[in-house]
Length: 354
Image (cartoon, rainbow, N blue to C red; front, side):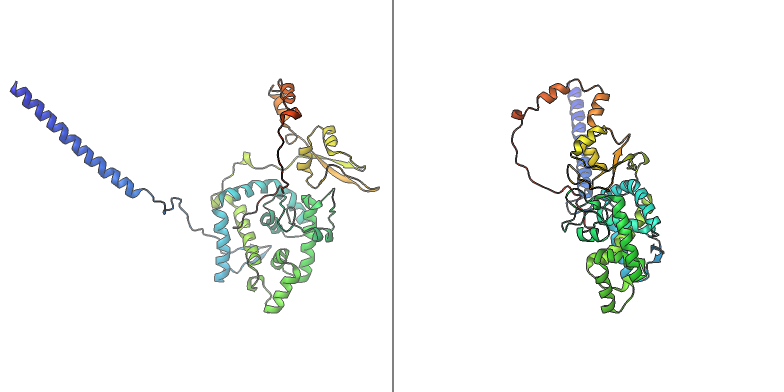
């Protein structure tokens, strides 16, 4: 009996000692983990410096990166856009849809291809509306748009027509090039205005954009273009990977020429087996629900074709989910819908400042 008791005591003592040792080991590991865990003041995401080419150009004109301030200003915009991944990825996707539209127009007017990057930084390749009233991919003010041949009234606003606004932008670029004989100054003048750039050049007695002291927005303008050009030309090099299957494909559509007034665009859309919304997506320059056409005038209307003409109703029908459509419509009686207050707002993309 005594032997058994002694044996039990030895086993119990050994077990307690083992548990104490394990507790000490676990405590030490826990302390180490706490010490290694980042605190609220630590940054977990790793950021890396970006090496870039020594020979950077815009429209065939070299950028003097040997100047410390030029190199640093370019690097600022490159870093800003490289680490703004969501925005830059969207630009890569949108460029696949819109560059094929813009590039041929620039080429037709013999404007350097690099100018397509201007509308990227102007509007992020959307029909944006600025607080000052500039509109479209190229951000023309109403007066400037009219000066360069764009029709703007209560029914239509051709600043929302990518093709026509690009044509107007080319006219501006060519006119400015006659004044400056330098594409970099032409691009800067698109932001600051030709008269202001010319005034700065005379006052400061210099002839290069890179030697001019101007407002911060204009000083950043060319470098934002250069940074976007650098990334979009080789996005994978800068950590932006977009699946080919998820790129935004160019719109597919057929064109209908109209010569008579349209009383209701919703009726017009229905006649062409699309929705009013799709009609406006493909023709955003239509600014009201009707269009009065004078004798001799014509307008080209884009009608989307597959796969861009699919509607929600079509999708439901294809999936066999339209059996309860009548029931759903019956539930939308006027007396079932509560009154709500509404506010007017601009449907525009918010353009982030880098």
